[in-house]
Length: 288
Length: 248
Image (cartoon, rainbow over all chains, first blue to last red; front, side, top):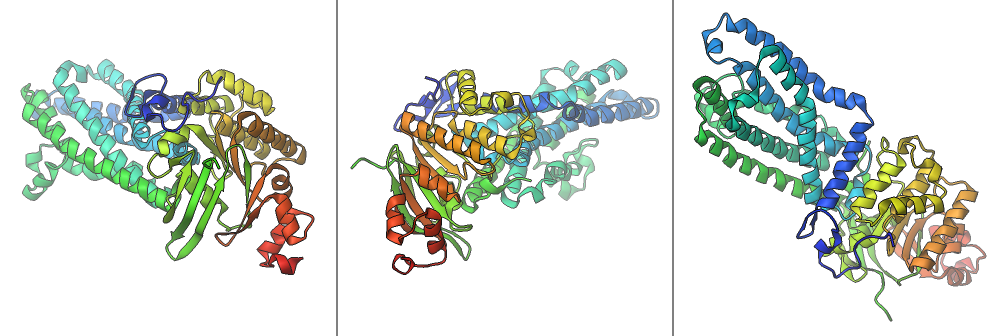
């Protein structure tokens, strides 16, 4: 017998998952199936892999030289070695997290595969989990070369600043996922005409994330807006680590709290647009 | 009488001012093949999409294998599958890779064995390591059917299952579907424009026009009712709004 592991309706949903973990119908095996699908896609496309690493690497090289130049001309940068490179690498991490999430979804739309996926037992939660893991994988593939080059050429390693900075990384990842959820919600609602949002949405947050300057340097009213973004807490926290050598728990907790709000909004938007797509028949029609 | 494998009650779907289907009710008994016949825009794809849960009805309900598709969709989806010309498999993946992914999604035990078995039955072994996007339309149809059968579905919904196939391959696929339904006691609902296909495969036919079921019965019953010798003539009578009495 090579049929499905499920034996019939009436059984608890989790019975349908025969390997991997399974909680209340959530199946690790189905998440792995989606990861396998993206692995096959990336394995078969060298240009995709190059594209992932290309821009972060170019960015890091430019900002590495800028840092070297300012080391001799700015006491602020000289006192906080690597602050510019660190900011660039962390910003890229946020960008890669969001774009990795959104692109993995767009791949399904481009291939007109959503209809097949959503009549399979794959649940939206499993689908989103797979997108999150893929965003992590894509970010590692994209950022690893730039991080290695930063270490080799500019003797800069984000890991040398301890686990505190890694905690801030995680907050950026979660923010990227939340924005990714919002982007795919808009694409589900408005179709592929909204796909360019995947590339540009994140840049609306760049000025108020205080990537290269302290939040305090913003106009007062904009500071209030900035503190409504998880990224502002993260970059402020990064400067605390780089300049003062202090890990600010308050900023980490702030980032986590705002992240949770973003994640809830992103999940709500996705759930709403998924329902809307089922009402309007867009799951079957979407594609190039 | 046993519970129908597919039961649609009073299905209505509106998109703004447009009514795609209205008051569609039917049942399909387990192990039977039913055809959904109708012209373009008759509501066949809308009906199938609602049965799959891809589209929510504006009114009415669907039960598949006794499960309410609005509330218990995920309990019955592992036992269903479908193929449609409106969706594709990822083009950059090979056929084997696509089938492996769907084998995992449907929690198929020993998916590689199942893929090999299906490929042999559907004459697709030579296609397994080719990229799906490089296949001809007919080859893609066969691969889509392999995907639709990967989990040995008890309920199979097929939208134009032999579209783009040459007559020889189409005939061969029909034979396979007949065998599959008989061996697995599977329930099949197929939407088609191909009257010969419906006449050959289906135990029961639902005739749709402008979003409603306007007639139903076995192919023999429909032929007798309209006094015609082929389902194509019956289809034309219905499409042109000629009632059975006038037609005969």
